Length: 183
Image (cartoon, rainbow, N blue to C red; front, side, top):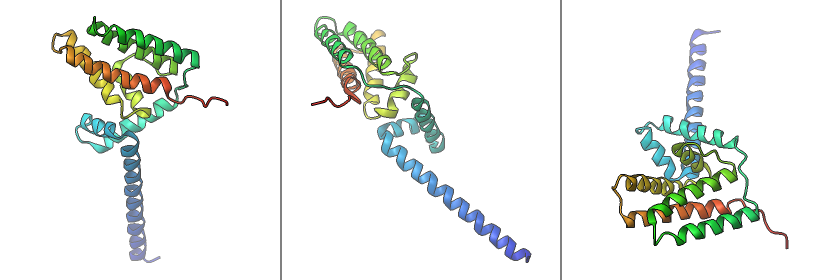
């Protein structure tokens, strides 16, 4: 074969491969942005603007969470957790700091009952972001307020905001993936 033709074919093949890789990355980026919403931007910020690093981290989260046995709560669990939440919420007026701590602990219990590992806060938030990306920022913010309050850097209004953030995620986790009731 003519070496010029071989070189041209090789260049065309390399260009086609480059285009295919670019298109695949673009599709992956679009899917991740759609799935993770604001969490995509959060991860991009954490990766200091490195899209490839941010997207790799999000893909790793997906793979990690796929291995979990995430399940809906049984109706009796759901009722018990809802009752527990009402008790925690009722205590807020008298002891906001304790209520926020109890809300965080109850949220961890719900996560554990649903099948999420709950060892480390950052890992919990990352795991939650796969299925609840729009609420995980509330969770991070609530946790941050609780930590700041423990250092004397947050007031009662901040604690109220933390509690609201915990409540939004709690309600989502309590009812997520509930089976349809037979009629």
